Every structure is written in C-alpha cells, then in structure tokens.
Image 1 (cartoon, rainbow, N blue to C red):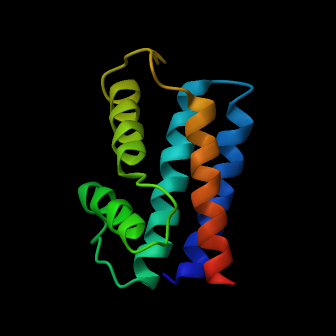
Image 2 (spheres, rainbow, N blue to C red; image 1 turned 180 degrees about the vertical axis):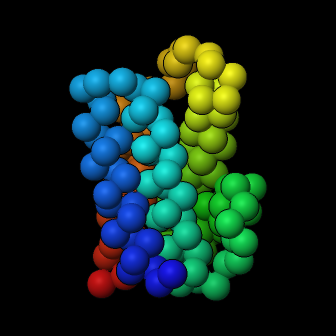
Length: 122
C-alpha cells in the first residue's frame, strides 16, 4: 500500500480516536494506536525502513524516524505505551487506568505524526 494511502487510513483512524475522547477512552486508545501505526507505516515506507507488519519493528521505526530528523521527537515510547494499553484493555479486559498517561496527550502526539506523514505524502 502506498504511503499516501496509509496516510488516509491514519487520518480516518485519528478522527475516530478524537471522537472517542468524548466517549469511551478505551476505544480512543485503540483508534489512536491504529492511526499511529498507519502513520509510521507511511513514513517508514518513504524512508525505506522495513517494518514487515510487526509492532516491534514499528517501535524501532519510530525511533529511527526521529534519528533521521523526520519526526521532532522519539515516539517509540508512545507506540509501546499505546500497544500495551490496547492489549491490556482488549485482550485482558482491564480498565483503562490513566495514571501518568493522558489519552488526550497521546492523541495530540498522534495528530502531530499524522500531519507530518500527510505533508510528506503530498
């Protein structure tokens, strides 16, 4: 799939995450994670960073994208945190505990990454 197509997916998922800020934050986490992954996919493809549809490679790609100056910050921890929360919520049935973690801040960071991916895909 082309980087431009991945950016469109990232935008759609981001919009759903933003909608869920007024609803179920568990769903906001799921959509934010999906958006972040699509945006990382788009940027990684452009930079020829192989991810092979694996979460841990996307985490590494986020770090590399920062090191290459594509992203203003290292968002690898955000990717790991959202992945962990997503699994805890949907696989283990845990409640979303936001101690030290803000869904709103995470979605704002994802929005930044989606915007960068969008600008680069244009």
